Picture 1 (spheres, rainbow, N blue to C red):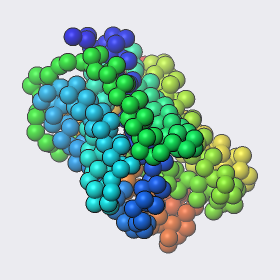
Picture 2 (picture 1 turned 90 degrees about the vertical axis):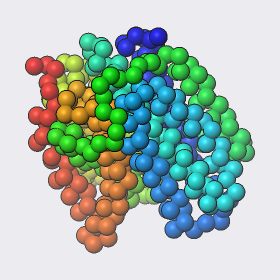
Picture 3 (picture 1 turned 135 degrees about the horizontal axis):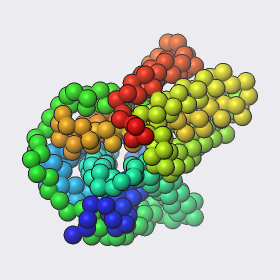
Amino acid sequence: MPQADTPATRLATRLAFFIAGFGIACWAPLVPFAKNRLGIDDAALGLLLLCLGSGSVIAMLGAGTLSARFGTRPVILGGSAGLVLLLPCLALAPSAATLGLALLLFGASLGALDVGMNVHSIEVENASSEPLLSGFHALYSVGGFAGAATMTGLLTLGTQVWAATLLSAGLMAVASLIMAPRLLISRPEGEESHVAMPRGIVLGLCGLAAVTFLVEGSLLDWGALLITDLRLLDLRHAGAGYMLFAIAMTFGRFTGDRLTAQIGDRAAVLWGGVVVIAGFAVLLAAPVAGVALAGFVLIGLGAANIVPVYFRVAGSQSVMSAHLAVAVMTTAGYAGILLGPAMIGFVAQHAGLRTSFAMLTALFLIIPLTARVAPSRAD
């Protein structure tokens, strides 16, 4: 049985994050193919995408209970197996109803894996003498790049959609087989095994996680439109902003463990929040495209290590089970990604997109102002 912190368990944790990022990224290039194959309009497509998010949120709550009762290994393996089996179904579903069901189950698999891998990562880090969470989270971004590149590359080469999904699913299956024997086999003792509402510090962490994830979701859905509304880039190049944000966040997470070990978690949240706010200020006041793109980079670097610190705090608090705390915090963060961009759009419709992002910047002030929630390892 693998020990809590060994090269094997670290590899397994990294593979879990990689599989999650790879799986969801494989779906993105399939969206236009699904829309054309089924002949549905934008409204129907929106409902189908809601199935994906709904499945994730529902499974996240259940996954916390299962992890508390049976350990993280079956939850991680079940989630990864679901992604492998269901990805080809997304390309083969013959109707909108069957695609909706497939997306619901695909989202549930992703949600279960998300909770399981985060709890597993905390267990591995707790057995270590050094921070590890930022590096683990970086592998999610790497998986996202790899999944999007693999699927897009296969489709560009003329591979049939169903064949491209089978090949991509095969890569996830290989990663899962490498991961499986290296995962921790443990059943937590004395843990709550029922669904619980967040309370105490966990409730605060849920709100902070939602705000932080809201930034990522807003830049994903609205960043390109913002930079075109500011008349800094045309539509053909508007995606460069989010691309630089994602690259900066990945870099920040690869270097984040060393950073937090040196300055402490509290300082990482405080100064990370300050850098994010500075990035938004640069973006909104940018006179030229190059300055605006620098703003995206600052936001990615600043936000990179905030969420890993929050997960670390959730794993070490004693108000409620760490497994359930991570589950509800993950759900809150995902809600921020889903609901935040819709709120941005509502405000933008009445006050403009620049005003929406200015309000988002003001909201993000809560992150550095509450940095004391994170203990400082440097202390």
